Length: 141
Image (cartoon, rainbow, N blue to C red; front, side, top):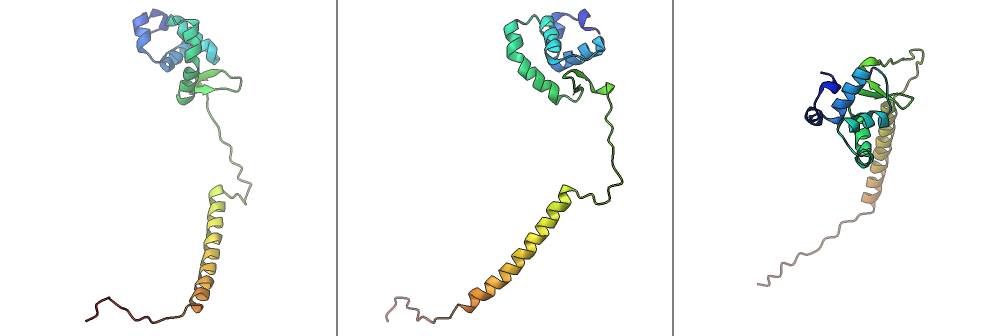
């Protein structure tokens, strides 16, 4: 069903993101945030004040919905119309991931701790002496 064929009651039951999806699908072109939301506000008979109060939340909802993609020119479009390609440079042989670097650092820290702990324990024990003390339990029979 097209948006123009829907009653106001039907439109009010839809979320802003659902309305956005329908608008972008029907218009078949990209649009910026204020343009799309202005269309929604017109459909729902919102005032300019309501537009101003709600546009921030509307933008946030668009960023969280995976059906939409924000393009470099600050316009929104349907994600299904765009593909993402990843290029992997296989020529780079010494590729270290951040995890590898962290693991290497952890290993060296543990080795240093082990070395320091053994030396400190030996030094501390050599300074200790045993003192015998007569224990008095307070019972003078």
